[in-house]
Length: 143
Image 1 (cartoon, rainbow, N blue to C red):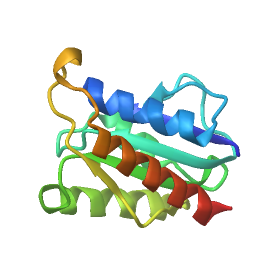
Image 2 (image 1 turned 90 degrees about the vertical axis):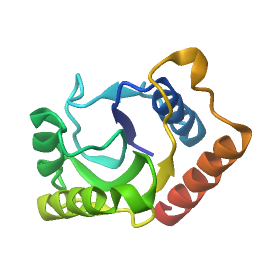
Image 3 (image 1 turned 90 degrees about the horizontal axis):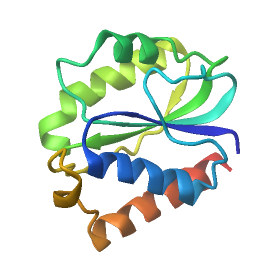
């Protein structure tokens, strides 16, 4: 499947989650940042892994508002934090992406991203399993 995993975070754990998703999905393209070095063109799936906040850089907002069908058919979100704390921001992000034209996968994966320091931010086994299960459901729904 033609897909990309992109990050907008400085947290090591979230970057590791992005790599895990990328590997489990069997993507041949390396994980990249937003905005990506190479533009998205006709991707079947774009997974955005982010430490979403109200103060996201303008490039992130522009990228998401430009995810039309020519760039990505489907977009899935992995968010640093909890659904309770990030609900409004996630809903606005979903609206921006869907207004651009891409389908937004309804199930958002929430991960506690921890600190930006690598050695303090290991993925726990239960989190790794949650990522694997979420990725499997995502790919199954797109098959």
